[in-house]
Length: 463
Image 1 (spheres, one colour):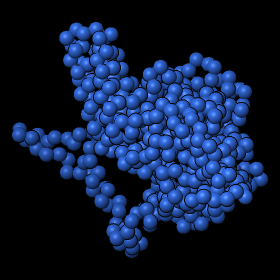
Image 2: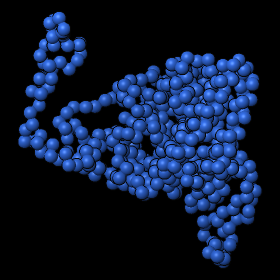
Image 3: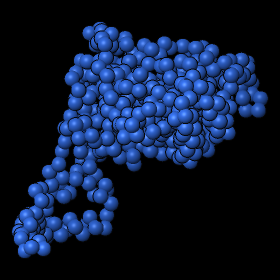
Image 4: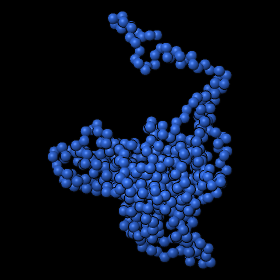
């Protein structure tokens, strides 16, 4: 088939690059199902692809043992909320509280920080509407602003800014609610609320209202946002009383099942004083290191408009080779410090087995085809970037070289090995995007790069 006749009887050539008749014929002739392919087809037609492709050989490599493990207890569960970044950030701090207070387990209130996160994001969105109110609706930055609006997602930089401004409270002080753990409907309604307020601001702007007056409209709108969040998550406390039961050995008598000399006296806190007294870390001492092979290494970068709190620092990082990041991570683990880190969780991971391993699912062998992308190629082709955060809490070394890493996830204790996962080092190379580590573990040469003027990346770089 070379084309079809036009109304005047002339032949029309296929469009350049189209699936022409000759090409379609070639594709058909390139594949003829033999006995092996027929067996494949029968298996694939009646089976889950993931189960068929899962490499039993790679799965069997995990013996569950690690030569070094950070002291921590308990697994948190973000459930149906996209708060992995918040859980991973708090999992950096939880062991410190347990150690200071002599607790077997401890959790911060995620509802408390979630409240302030959404309030700040709502303010950021409406402030963005004011600043960009004259933008072309087709402008890419304008589209990103209005597509994101508010949402669950975030970075370490978000958590740091929220904790520095609002402090922390124990989970019992501001308990979880249904909408804290399943945010889908709450987020939809909040987005609609904010867009209605944005439309009001734009109507006033179109009538010539000045920016100072638009900001007063925004401040009034934030009262509705505060009310909405309070009814979904609860009103965050300004101060609270709290006590705990020490878990160390004691000879004291019991009353209602509680060892009396283990129970501390009630103490009054503000969220800020609770953070200072139980955590007491300078969060600005923790830095973000990226492995983004589509950007030059040993450079300082900043994500444009990547902040949740107006006036806070934007998300910034130094881009390093993966081997340099691995060495820094190992140094932190050997110092008994958890490492929040971001990954592309969409490839080669099994929640059932708690495994992350390069080519864990062997689709090439299953289908008899060749695939494979380098990390740099995935970045260039806009494959999903870091969409999940967890914490590294251990390593298994062979002759001083990490073979696998122990991971604390926030998907509950029914995933992986009671909530803990094994990340093999080959997966580390391919899918770890960034890590958060204390400056004492970072070489002086790398720290000096943070002092350089950053290269600004557009707001859609991570879209």
